[in-house]
Length: 136
Image (cartoon, rainbow, N blue to C red; front, side):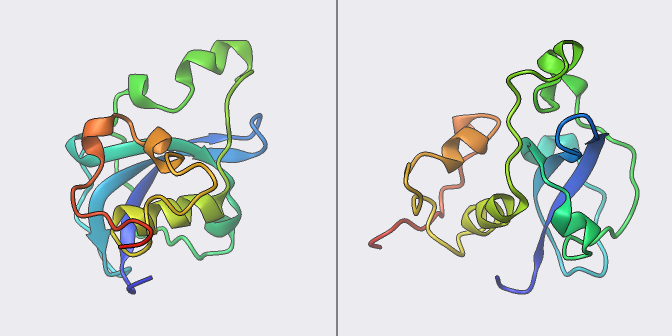
């Protein structure tokens, strides 16, 4: 919402899971023209998401880097052998809102379930301290 981009990396294409992609989101911003190589130390979330905003070009691909995120942090990796039964695909629009909330551009708790975005984090400790909340 502020003209910058939150950095993410495609971890895997998942055609068997609603033709989604698994992505890592990094606590790192870009101007949309260039970026510093993301590192696993900056990952705050890994999700499976719809690929519509990627395919339309709204989510820009700026570079190709080797994936440094450990496979153990890939979303639903433990379900891969079972055909991802039980996995959840989060809509790209929700991921955009998650990114905006993470960057303190929209309220973190502005969902029917105010703790919805908390569950998208790899761990509670990765929740930013500068968030904005409804009513503040």
